[in-house]
Amino acid sequence: MDDRIIDWKDTHSRVTISLMIKPIGIKTIGHHLKDPVYTKALFVSLTLLVASLVINFFAGRYATADASNPVTDIVLSNIPVFDIDSIFVYGAFVLVAIIAFLCFFYPRRAPFILKAISLFTIIRAIFVNLTHLGPFPTQVAIDPLSLINNFTFGGDLFFSGHTGLPFLMALLFWDNKTLRTFFIAVSVTFGVVVLMGHLHYSIDVLAAFFITYSIYHLSERLFKKDKLMADESSHHMLAQ
Image 1 (spheres, rainbow, N blue to C red):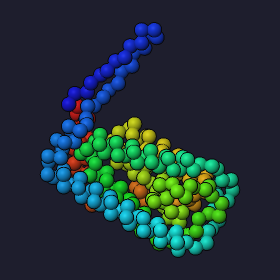
Image 2: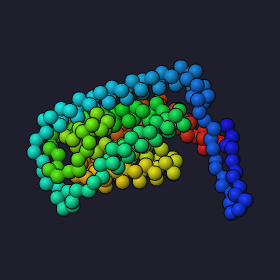
Image 3: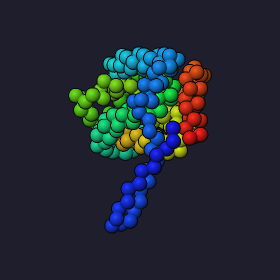
Image 4: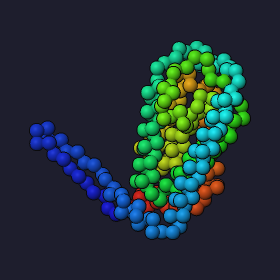
Protein backbone atom coordinates (compact mmCIF):
# COMPACT_ATOMS: atom_id res chain seq x y z
CA MET A 1 0.00 0.00 0.00
CA ASP A 2 1.51 3.36 -1.02
CA ASP A 3 2.30 6.08 1.47
CA ARG A 4 0.20 9.20 1.32
CA ILE A 5 1.62 12.70 1.74
CA ILE A 6 -0.58 15.33 3.37
CA ASP A 7 0.57 18.96 3.12
CA TRP A 8 -0.68 21.84 5.22
CA LYS A 9 0.39 25.32 3.99
CA ASP A 10 0.26 28.30 6.28
CA THR A 11 -0.30 31.32 4.02
CA HIS A 12 1.18 33.62 6.64
CA SER A 13 4.35 31.77 7.58
CA ARG A 14 4.54 29.88 4.28
CA VAL A 15 5.53 26.73 6.15
CA THR A 16 4.80 23.38 4.58
CA ILE A 17 4.51 20.38 6.84
CA SER A 18 4.60 16.97 5.19
CA LEU A 19 3.64 13.83 7.07
CA MET A 20 4.21 10.35 5.73
CA ILE A 21 1.24 8.23 6.78
CA LYS A 22 0.97 4.52 6.32
CA PRO A 23 -2.77 3.82 6.09
CA ILE A 24 -3.32 0.82 8.27
CA GLY A 25 -6.22 0.08 10.59
CA ILE A 26 -9.26 -2.01 11.21
CA LYS A 27 -9.57 -3.22 7.63
CA THR A 28 -5.95 -4.36 7.61
CA ILE A 29 -6.31 -6.21 10.91
CA GLY A 30 -9.58 -7.72 9.71
CA HIS A 31 -7.73 -8.98 6.65
CA HIS A 32 -5.08 -10.64 8.84
CA LEU A 33 -7.73 -12.25 11.04
CA LYS A 34 -8.97 -14.14 7.99
CA ASP A 35 -5.64 -15.97 7.99
CA PRO A 36 -6.04 -18.99 10.33
CA VAL A 37 -2.29 -19.18 10.98
CA TYR A 38 -2.18 -15.54 12.10
CA THR A 39 -5.39 -15.88 14.12
CA LYS A 40 -4.04 -18.90 15.97
CA ALA A 41 -0.72 -17.16 16.68
CA LEU A 42 -2.51 -14.07 17.98
CA PHE A 43 -4.85 -16.13 20.18
CA VAL A 44 -1.95 -18.10 21.67
CA SER A 45 0.02 -14.91 22.31
CA LEU A 46 -2.91 -13.23 24.08
CA THR A 47 -3.53 -16.36 26.17
CA LEU A 48 0.13 -16.52 27.12
CA LEU A 49 0.10 -12.82 28.02
CA VAL A 50 -2.88 -13.25 30.37
CA ALA A 51 -1.25 -16.30 31.97
CA SER A 52 2.00 -14.37 32.50
CA LEU A 53 0.16 -11.51 34.20
CA VAL A 54 -1.56 -13.95 36.55
CA ILE A 55 1.80 -15.54 37.39
CA ASN A 56 3.30 -12.08 37.91
CA PHE A 57 0.46 -11.15 40.29
CA PHE A 58 0.92 -14.12 42.60
CA ALA A 59 4.72 -14.01 42.37
CA GLY A 60 4.79 -10.34 43.31
CA ARG A 61 2.37 -10.81 46.18
CA TYR A 62 4.39 -13.73 47.56
CA ALA A 63 7.75 -11.97 47.26
CA THR A 64 6.39 -8.88 49.00
CA ALA A 65 4.75 -10.82 51.82
CA ASP A 66 7.92 -12.85 52.38
CA ALA A 67 10.38 -9.96 51.96
CA SER A 68 13.36 -9.94 54.32
CA ASN A 69 15.57 -7.06 55.40
CA PRO A 70 16.78 -4.28 53.07
CA VAL A 71 20.45 -3.84 52.18
CA THR A 72 22.62 -0.83 51.53
CA ASP A 73 23.14 0.39 47.97
CA ILE A 74 25.99 2.50 46.63
CA VAL A 75 23.54 4.71 44.71
CA LEU A 76 20.45 4.83 46.94
CA SER A 77 22.49 5.34 50.10
CA ASN A 78 23.99 8.50 48.63
CA ILE A 79 21.01 10.27 47.03
CA PRO A 80 17.81 11.66 48.57
CA VAL A 81 14.33 10.43 47.66
CA PHE A 82 12.72 12.37 44.83
CA ASP A 83 8.97 12.68 44.31
CA ILE A 84 8.64 10.78 41.03
CA ASP A 85 5.52 8.71 41.76
CA SER A 86 3.53 10.29 38.89
CA ILE A 87 6.21 9.37 36.34
CA PHE A 88 6.50 5.87 37.80
CA VAL A 89 2.74 5.25 37.67
CA TYR A 90 1.45 7.15 34.66
CA GLY A 91 4.59 6.62 32.62
CA ALA A 92 4.03 2.87 32.87
CA PHE A 93 0.46 3.16 31.63
CA VAL A 94 1.53 5.39 28.72
CA LEU A 95 4.14 2.79 27.78
CA VAL A 96 1.51 0.04 27.78
CA ALA A 97 -0.77 2.19 25.61
CA ILE A 98 2.07 2.76 23.12
CA ILE A 99 2.78 -0.98 22.96
CA ALA A 100 -0.92 -1.69 22.34
CA PHE A 101 -0.95 0.91 19.56
CA LEU A 102 2.11 -0.63 17.92
CA CYS A 103 0.49 -4.08 18.00
CA PHE A 104 -2.52 -2.53 16.25
CA PHE A 105 -0.37 -0.59 13.78
CA TYR A 106 1.91 -3.55 13.02
CA PRO A 107 -0.49 -6.51 13.34
CA ARG A 108 1.91 -9.06 11.82
CA ARG A 109 4.40 -8.25 14.55
CA ALA A 110 1.85 -8.50 17.36
CA PRO A 111 2.14 -12.26 18.10
CA PHE A 112 5.91 -12.10 18.51
CA ILE A 113 5.74 -8.88 20.55
CA LEU A 114 3.13 -10.32 22.92
CA LYS A 115 4.91 -13.66 23.32
CA ALA A 116 8.23 -11.94 24.02
CA ILE A 117 6.55 -9.72 26.63
CA SER A 118 4.89 -12.79 28.16
CA LEU A 119 8.23 -14.60 28.41
CA PHE A 120 9.76 -11.45 29.91
CA THR A 121 6.99 -11.31 32.54
CA ILE A 122 7.26 -15.01 33.45
CA ILE A 123 11.06 -14.96 33.75
CA ARG A 124 10.91 -11.81 35.86
CA ALA A 125 8.34 -13.49 38.13
CA ILE A 126 10.77 -16.36 38.65
CA PHE A 127 13.66 -14.00 39.44
CA VAL A 128 11.49 -12.03 41.86
CA ASN A 129 10.87 -15.17 43.92
CA LEU A 130 14.48 -16.34 44.08
CA THR A 131 15.74 -13.66 46.49
CA HIS A 132 13.38 -11.84 48.83
CA LEU A 133 15.16 -8.57 49.53
CA GLY A 134 13.14 -5.99 51.39
CA PRO A 135 12.48 -2.59 49.79
CA PHE A 136 14.97 0.18 50.54
CA PRO A 137 14.02 1.86 53.86
CA THR A 138 13.42 5.27 52.30
CA GLN A 139 11.35 5.45 49.14
CA VAL A 140 8.69 7.58 47.50
CA ALA A 141 5.14 6.74 48.53
CA ILE A 142 2.91 5.25 45.84
CA ASP A 143 -0.84 5.72 46.19
CA PRO A 144 -2.10 2.40 47.63
CA LEU A 145 -5.28 2.72 45.54
CA SER A 146 -3.36 3.11 42.28
CA LEU A 147 -4.07 0.53 39.59
CA ILE A 148 -0.33 -0.08 39.21
CA ASN A 149 -0.36 -1.90 42.55
CA ASN A 150 -1.97 -4.82 40.72
CA PHE A 151 1.23 -5.21 38.70
CA THR A 152 4.00 -4.09 41.07
CA PHE A 153 3.93 -4.79 44.79
CA GLY A 154 7.00 -3.31 46.47
CA GLY A 155 8.88 -6.53 47.09
CA ASP A 156 9.18 -7.59 43.45
CA LEU A 157 12.54 -5.95 42.97
CA PHE A 158 14.91 -8.00 40.83
CA PHE A 159 14.90 -7.12 38.05
CA SER A 160 13.32 -3.77 37.15
CA GLY A 161 10.33 -4.20 34.85
CA HIS A 162 10.14 -0.45 34.26
CA THR A 163 13.66 -0.59 32.83
CA GLY A 164 13.48 -3.95 31.07
CA LEU A 165 10.17 -3.70 29.21
CA PRO A 166 10.98 -0.59 27.12
CA PHE A 167 14.42 -2.05 26.39
CA LEU A 168 12.71 -5.22 25.15
CA MET A 169 10.56 -3.06 22.87
CA ALA A 170 13.72 -1.39 21.55
CA LEU A 171 15.08 -4.83 20.65
CA LEU A 172 11.78 -5.84 19.04
CA PHE A 173 11.84 -2.72 16.85
CA TRP A 174 15.61 -2.54 16.36
CA ASP A 175 15.14 -2.14 12.60
CA ASN A 176 13.16 1.08 13.16
CA LYS A 177 15.65 3.76 14.20
CA THR A 178 12.98 6.13 15.55
CA LEU A 179 11.27 3.53 17.75
CA ARG A 180 14.59 2.01 18.80
CA THR A 181 15.90 5.38 19.97
CA PHE A 182 12.63 6.24 21.67
CA PHE A 183 12.38 3.01 23.66
CA ILE A 184 16.04 3.10 24.70
CA ALA A 185 15.49 6.65 25.95
CA VAL A 186 12.39 5.52 27.86
CA SER A 187 14.29 2.58 29.36
CA VAL A 188 17.14 4.78 30.59
CA THR A 189 14.67 7.40 31.87
CA PHE A 190 12.68 4.82 33.83
CA GLY A 191 15.91 3.39 35.20
CA VAL A 192 16.87 6.81 36.54
CA VAL A 193 13.35 7.43 37.85
CA VAL A 194 13.12 4.23 39.91
CA LEU A 195 16.53 4.98 41.43
CA MET A 196 15.53 8.55 42.25
CA GLY A 197 12.43 7.25 44.00
CA HIS A 198 14.41 4.47 45.74
CA LEU A 199 11.92 2.01 44.26
CA HIS A 200 14.62 -0.33 42.97
CA TYR A 201 18.17 -1.15 43.95
CA SER A 202 20.83 -0.18 41.43
CA ILE A 203 21.49 -3.85 40.61
CA ASP A 204 17.80 -4.25 39.66
CA VAL A 205 18.21 -1.55 37.03
CA LEU A 206 21.62 -2.51 35.65
CA ALA A 207 20.82 -6.23 35.45
CA ALA A 208 17.57 -5.51 33.60
CA PHE A 209 19.42 -4.66 30.38
CA PHE A 210 21.46 -7.87 30.32
CA ILE A 211 18.60 -10.17 31.33
CA THR A 212 16.20 -8.55 28.86
CA TYR A 213 18.73 -8.95 26.06
CA SER A 214 18.91 -12.67 26.84
CA ILE A 215 15.11 -12.93 26.99
CA TYR A 216 14.83 -11.38 23.54
CA HIS A 217 17.20 -13.93 22.01
CA LEU A 218 15.45 -16.73 23.87
CA SER A 219 12.17 -15.50 22.35
CA GLU A 220 13.73 -15.71 18.89
CA ARG A 221 14.49 -19.38 19.50
CA LEU A 222 11.19 -20.30 21.15
CA PHE A 223 8.89 -18.39 18.81
CA LYS A 224 10.60 -18.84 15.45
CA LYS A 225 7.42 -18.78 13.35
CA ASP A 226 6.21 -15.59 15.01
CA LYS A 227 9.63 -13.99 14.55
CA LEU A 228 9.58 -14.95 10.88
CA MET A 229 6.13 -13.39 10.51
CA ALA A 230 7.40 -10.19 12.15
CA ASP A 231 10.50 -10.11 9.92
CA GLU A 232 8.40 -10.59 6.79
CA SER A 233 6.23 -7.68 7.87
CA SER A 234 9.32 -5.53 8.41
CA HIS A 235 10.77 -6.41 5.00
CA HIS A 236 7.45 -5.68 3.33
CA MET A 237 7.29 -2.20 4.87
CA LEU A 238 10.85 -1.43 3.84
CA ALA A 239 9.98 -2.41 0.29
CA GLN A 240 7.05 0.02 0.19
